[in-house]
Image (cartoon, rainbow over all chains, first blue to last red):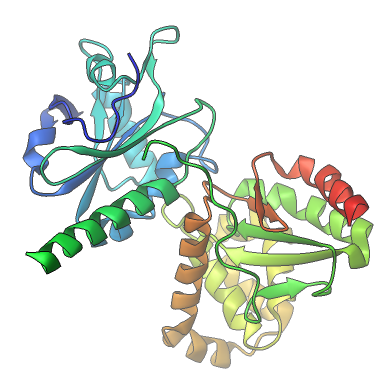
Length: 163
Length: 182
């Protein structure tokens, strides 16, 4: 299955964010959401996609966008990683059944059994507005996310100006 | 809107940049760097070597890209270099920070202060400069310009405005190619 593209409804999910808490996508209805699927916890820091996003939470906040990162790693690994890297956003565990959410979004790598490196920007009503599949070893950066959020914001304000 | 191509350098080199080399050099190398990033520390001597090798053919520009959560001293170090810049000592401070990265990283804020003394910065003037919002804004604006240009980690390099995907070891070969074609 190919990566879900812009215009599709974002499939809802409920995943563990810590060993004893869960997060559902539907909780964020009314806000924009950035979903960042990534292959594995504990990749090196300097080129780390999540380390970059972690510096941009305030910027994402300007667009009322919440970042959620998802990998197939377990909640305890996520907890340790979050603490070590001082991440200030949820890491969700697509762990059991493994990769089920990544499959729904069309970004599961069957061969390696991990989520691919993929980004989705989802609007307030739960519709995917931008998606991007990055080559596995390539950190996609954040310029695509910011452009998508910007386009959404100007689109909304335009509509408001018209009505 | 599924396609996504990494943009080129969106903020052109300007008068307020930290620049070494001639404006009319055929090759301009822009680095987005973090003073506490070990990979940037490893790139530093190679960049110095490249600058010596290419001489007048190369202009080098440094911009701030501190990953502050990963490297807690990256931002204070960047602030210190910017404060030094106001005293026309940017490059000595920049060089000191990379040449002594392991030492000051281990000693925290006190380790950084040693740099002010080593470079001969007027500490009272630097402290005054750091109380104003300008330096903070400059670092943030460097950072966001980098993000908009597709910088995804440090060090991030641009050659004549195009982002280099490879690491610093590939720079010399790429620069040689550009010089030849110039």
